[in-house]
Length: 63
Image (cartoon, rainbow, N blue to C red; front, side, top):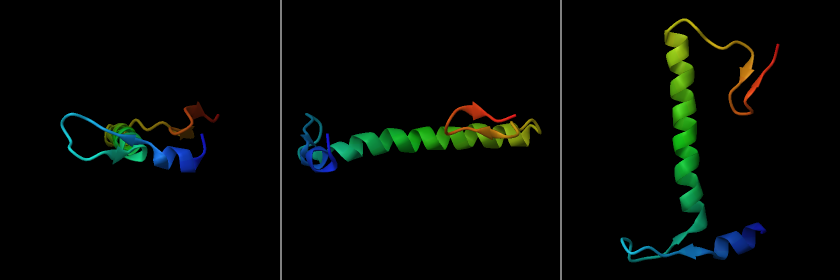
């Protein structure tokens, strides 16, 4: 699907009277993922046990 078709999708729920965009559904989860990744990185740094040379977004460890 291209961006125009995705923008045309509107989701309707019983709890919300107005329809909302498909991107709202995706953005909520992406925000939570980024928040938790940052929390894990910060907790490891505070414990003085950071993962050096690691890309948390790609899940790769560069040696």
